[in-house]
Image 1 (tube, rainbow, N blue to C red):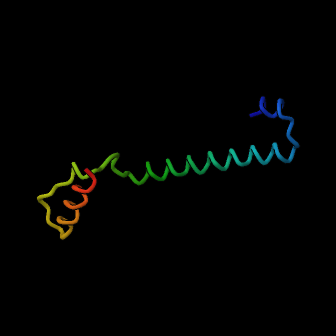
Image 2 (image 1 turned 135 degrees about the horizontal axis):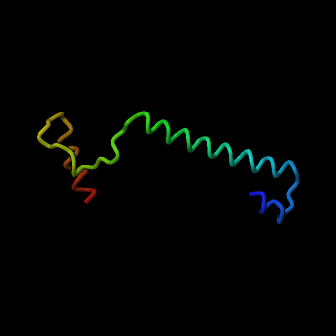
Image 3 (image 1 turned 180 degrees about the vertical axis):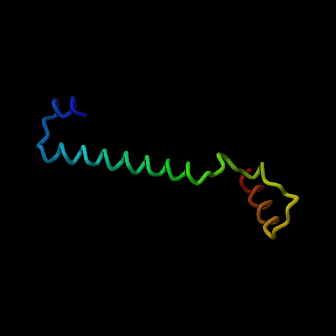
Length: 70
């Protein structure tokens, strides 16, 4: 970032704004990753791993979605 600023020669204001935008983006990304990790969500779920023996009223809708998707 500093090397590019030496080449482009932005104003101090533009340079600081670019640094701050980069920091905000990094913090949002890190915060999202932290929240997902702390939520302990399963890594991957799809209809192939769904237990169709469990009847919860959504069975027909899930089968229909599976047929449409594939």
